[in-house]
Amino acid sequence: MKKPELLAPAGSLEKLKTAFIYGADAVYIGGEEFSLRVAAENFTMEEMAEGVKYAHDRGKKVYLTANIIPHNTDIDQYAEFIKSAYKTGVDAVLVSDLGMFAITREICPDLEIHISTQANNVNYKSACMWHEMGAKRVVVAREMSFEEIAEIRERTPETLELEAFVHGAMCISYSGRCLLSNYMTNRDSNQGACSHPCRWNYYLMEEKRPGEYMPVFENERGTFIYNSKDLCMIEHIDDLIKSGIDSLKIEGRVKTEYYLATVVKAYRDAIDTYFEDPENFKFDPKWLEELKKVSHRDYTTGFYYGKPGGDEQNYETSSYIRDYELIGIVKEYDREKKLLSVVQKNRFFKGAEVEFLRPKGDFVKHKIEYMEDADGNEIEVANRPQSIAKIRIDEEIEPESMMRQVRIVNN
Image 1 (spheres, rainbow, N blue to C red):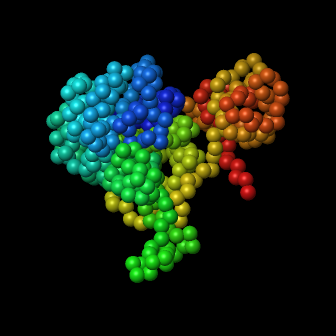
Image 2 (cartoon, one colour):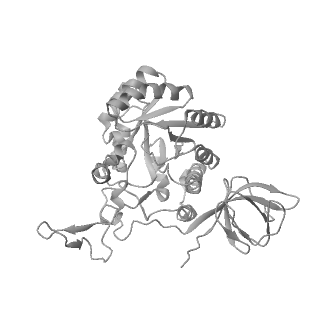
Image 3 (tube, one colour):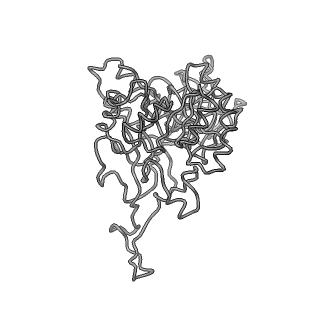
C-alpha cells in the first residue's frame, strides 16, 4: 500500500519551512496574484524560488495555487505570471479554469497540472476528462463521501492522482464557489477576498414586519445558520489511507505557524504509525488532543461518512476555541549552561508551566524556574516580542520547537 502524501498549506516562506520541519511531504503556496487567499502573505517570485530550493534540497515538493475564477483581465495577465513561476521550479500548478489550464499547457507543457477543488470535481467522468487533457491530479470536492471517492478511484486510471481535504475550515458553499461575500461586502470570494459572511450572526425578518428581527433559533444572541464546524479526520486516518487517496490535504494558508506545526505533526505521526503495523493499527487519542490545542472550531468528519445532518453546524457562536497560545520558538540549546534560547512571541513569566512541541517525539512539559535575557540578566517576565529569553532546562529541546502554555484569559 502506497503511503499518501501529506500536503500542508504555506502562506509565507517561514510557514513553508515550518511545514517541512514538522513533517509535510509537500506544500501548496500562492503567488501575489491568482491565489484564493489574498489574506495570506503569499510569495514574491524571489521567495517562491527560495522556497522551492529549500523544498527540493530536502526531497519535498511545492505546488502553486492559481485557482481563482478568472475574468478576461486575469487571463491576459496569467501567461506572464506562469512563465515567471515556472522558472522558480515549482512542481505543479493548481487551476480550476479551463482557460488557465490551456494557457499552462501551451506555455509550460511539462509542468504538472492539478485541478483545484474549485472545479467542483464530484464524478469520475470529469476526473477522466481532466486527465485525458493532461492533468496529473484532481482535488475532489469536500462534498464527497468515502463511497463516492472509492467509485472515482475505481473508474479512473491509476496514473491519475486524487487529492482530498482532511483537516481545516469547511465552506457552506459548494467547494468554495460562493457569491454571498460579493453580494454583502463587494469582496469576491472567487477572487480570493472572501469576508466570511457565513460566520456572521443572523436573524429572521418577516416580509410584512420590517424591523422585527426574530432569532432563527431560540437564543438571545441570534443564530449562526451557516457556521460549519471544522473538518478533522485524524480519528479515521486508516480509512483515509485505505480509500486510495494519494494526497491528504490540510487547509489553512492564513493560519499561524503554531497551528501549522501542530496539525502537520499530528497527521505525520498518525500516518507513520499506521504504516509501521497496518494490521494492528490503533488510533492514539494524543493526536486528537494535540489538534485541540490549536485555534479551532468544534470538529466534524464532514461528508466522508454520508450527507451531514444538523450536528455539523455550530448554532451558538462563530468564535474559535483557543485554549493554548504560542509564547516562543526555540533557537538553540547551550549544553554547558543548560540554557535554552527562545524567541519570544507572547509574554510569559517565571513559574509558568509550559510545553515544548517538538518536530519529532512527544511534547515536553517544563516549569520555568529560572530565565534570563540575552545579556545574562535574570528576569521574572519575558515581555519583549522577538527578543531572546534564555530558560534553564535539563533536557535538550530541538531548534524550531514551539513553546506554548495554557492561554491566560484576563477578566
